[in-house]
Structure formats: structure tokens, C-alpha cells
Length: 363
Ligand SMILES: Cc1cc2nc3c(=O)[nH]c(=O)nc-3n(C[C@H](O)[C@H](O)[C@H](O)COP(=O)(O)O)c2cc1C
Image (tube, rainbow, N blue to C red; front, side, top):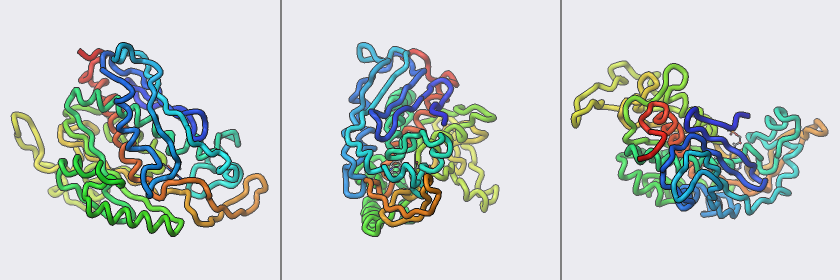
């Protein structure tokens, strides 16, 4: 398992769901950035479980702690080590999954890969809890990107087939943080919430789509051929447990468009170059165009469900039935919004440093 991402702004994830803590080491963060623990908290709060009837009842404070890399209120250029402690771990709830893997979760693949030594409690390294580290790195990255006037917006555009289309960015900025599903449309948010509640009553779960909009990204970010902006961002998005699809701009619908429909005509605008449409999602040749970078991330329904499921007892090598009693989210999507924002922010920071647009010392 690779635990690191990035070439200059490098993040290394550590910790398990039911261990002492989860956290992240950020290496390559420019020196001189004002940073304190309070800067981490708003995004950690958006990811935190136990806040509403449609989220896991696990009670965690998720208080971000900075252990190194900050002196006199500013980053020093040394590695930042940031943690959140696990305060409401109930490892006993997962004893059965040590030998009977949950369908849809990583219990089976972790067992095979690590020869039975992996910490299986609550999914261990494969738990959604591990994303708290990425969220803290994302909070730092967003502060750095703000220096370039780059803003990252995330919202839930679909849950269980119920869709919300973002008509304008102000709507996303204002409405998405204001409801528990982080949908840009308050009426659609209510319908999504009811759908999640129904799934929960049925012992089931729902999936959906998170849309990420990065505004103000300067043209020229991305490293062809392999470290393209799409490639690097996709890798970061796929590090989020439960993500099964990623698309940019028109995405998979390009397959049934004509060139005349899919090309984005160039125009002169405000002394610069823009395009009249943005089918490319702000990326051409793996490099940012200067238009908003638009990505959509498909998140699967939570694997842990309250219904009896068929599995195998790996010790006895015989069929087994599994009924999961642990505390789980009936829908991961709302909590994944801020994690996907963090993934995008970390990648944009890395590419901005590689392009020399962000400097090693903030002046
Ligand atoms: C914020 C967050 C919370 C999650 N919570 C749960 C959960 O409560 N129960 C569960 O089975 N999976 C949960 N997951 C998803 C699993 O961790 C994930 O499906 C599993 O590791 C298998 O990986 P894959 O779906 O990417 O193949 C969560 C994911 C995220 C991002």
C-alpha cells in the first residue's frame, strides 16, 4: 500500500480507524504560511461523523493537532505532522470481520495482501476515518492556494439517483454548507435526506456523486505525459475509500458528442484568453486552461449495511452469514465532499509548486 502522494508538496497518511490516532505528514509546504490548529477545524468539522441522523453515530471530536512544522504561528518549511486522536473506537464490534469479510469492504483484500496481519478493526487503514488526515492536508493546501486566488468548491450533485445541477457558483458557495447532505439546492437536499433515511430504515445504503469546482486555477498547471492534472487528481480522488469513478468536464458523455459540440471555442476576455463553454473541465493536454477545473467523483453505497449478507469464514473456509452491527454511514457522499475538495487542493498545490507558481518561501 502506498501511503504517499505528490512530488513536491508530499502527503503521507498514517493511522488506523481503531488505533491511537489518524494523521498526515505534509512535506514540502512553503515556509512563512500563517497556520494554527483552528485553520484545520472547519474542514474537519465538515467531515466529522455523528452530527446528524444520516451520518454514522460514532462520536468523535476530531480535533486537529499540529505536532511539528509550525513556529511562531508560521510554517517553517519542515514537515508538518498533523493528527486527530480516535476517541470513540469500539474495536469489539468488528471481531467477526477478522475472519468473515464484509462484502463490498476491503476486509478480504487486506487479509489476502497482508497475510492476516492487517488491523481489521473498523476497516483499519481502509476506513473512511483515515481521510481525516487528507482533510487536514487539504486545509493547509487551500490556504496556500488562496494566495493564488484559487478557491475550491465541493457539493453533492447526486444521491441515490436524485440529482441537483449547480446553476451558479454563488449558489454552491452559499447552499452546500448549509444542509447535512451538502447539496447546492435546498429543496433537492430535503429529498436526498428522506431517501437516505428510507435506505437506513431498510438496513441499506446509497451512493452518489460529488462535484468539485476549482476556481481561479491559472493556466499551465499539469505535467505531461504521465503527471497530467487529470491523472494526478484522479489518483488523489481514488485514494478516498468508496470512490469508484472520476470524470472531468463533459466526462463520459464525450463519447456521444460531436467535435463541434465538444470543442470549447476560445475568446478574448478581460485582457486574457477564455473559452465560451467548458466541456474540457478546464483541462487540455493534461494542463489547466485557466477555466474552472470541474471534476465529478462517483461514490458507491456504503458497504456496511444492516441486512444479512453472504460471506465466507476465512478460518474455516466455509460459507458464513454476516449481519453488521457496527456504526456506519448510510451514505458516505456528504462526508466525502470535503475529502474530495482536499484531494483536489493537495494536487493543485503540488502542481503549482512544481510549476514555480508557488514559491518555497511565502513573502
Ligand atoms: C468519510 C467516509 C466514511 C466511510 N464510512 C464507512 C462506513 O461507515 N462503513 C463502511 O462500510 N464503509 C465506509 N466507507 C467506505 C469504505 O471505507 C470503503 O468502501 C472500503 O474501504 C472499500 O474501498 P473501496 O470502496 O474504495 O473499494 C467510508 C468512506 C469514507 C470516505
